[in-house]
Image (cartoon, rainbow, N blue to C red; front, side, top):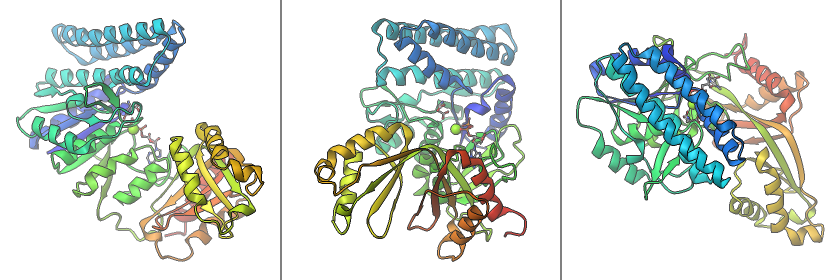
Length: 464
Ligand code: ADP
Ligand code: ASP
Ligand code: MG
């Protein structure tokens, strides 16, 4: 069995959906296929925009939904050949969108969009695209059945980015899948809690849906179909010379995606890694390309570095002061204070004098983080043993990732030497003890120059 996930960029309009249809049809000739769909391109953003407008009692949400309706109706018109097929598909689309409009009307009346309702609103993107794709496949004579992910993917109730109950999810998927000849079409990203309330898996979460299904059915392969030829050595929008990395290990893929290579969601690797199921990234508009294979073996090249990625909108907080030297438990208190405020630390670096700990986190969470630290260290702040928390914003984390950096001298030298020669300054550095990753902080304004400089240092002419 094969699981094939198509991202929003592969479900952008009728021509891309036609390409998806051809790929699925061909694969289904040889084996059983489960298709996982994202929302059509740009739709989740529009649904969020509509929810925010409705909550503000701003009536533009009706216009936003009108544009969502038009996009789906136009696609139905272009995809289906007969008027009967068009009518049936349009009827289904209309039914979903009417329901969504009623929900948004409710939001406007109460002027509140709770996280629970926000998840419900977002779920319509995937419900629409997967309903539409299942119908389209049937219109081409391919037996395809829509299966609601909310019957299979079970999470807790943390709306916005819920945690999956993997045991229950696997049990449900195996009881629903595994038999029958037809292709199952499953909406990605959406799930339900134990009470059946709609939840979501976080932005870009459809990749995760695909790997959960793949692990549950012990698929031969999980395929992620997108709009690039595979995982590239850097974000192709910033680095023209970026090239497709043909093979990576699960860990390298996880680190690259965690550090911003959005082509695959970092959680995707978790369910399949224990079972050794390979993930393949493929280009929907160029399916002959070999793509990228993520597996236990990883790359067979001798290059030290596999790829470079970056996360924007970063802030750093420096925790500094004489009161920290040799005092055990400071790091523990920092982590505890931030964890209880639900703040995620992306990177830390500590000077060996123990005088300073530098924390990198998302800009949006920075003020809440400072407040949490102020309250945890109120005593130390009063007696000045810890200085005022210094906050810097407009930063970017850049990470250089590679399984073969481990134990190889000279990688950091090459990296920071190149940065120095290019006149780019580095605010903080951290190296994971796995030595699979060196991450460092630069000014946001230096992002593109940094990516190009580092790419050139490891992959440019004369390097190997
Ligand atoms: P989908 O709609 O298929 O889920 P995404 O937009 O989530 O697609 O991911 C694909 C995009 O990720 C590419 O178009 C590319 O611009 C971007 N990207 C960022 N970093 C990388 C990278 N290292 N390799 C490939 N693509 C990357
Ligand atoms: N549609 C969702 C998003 O835009 C999930 C996904 O595409 O994977 O984030
Ligand atoms: Mg994606």
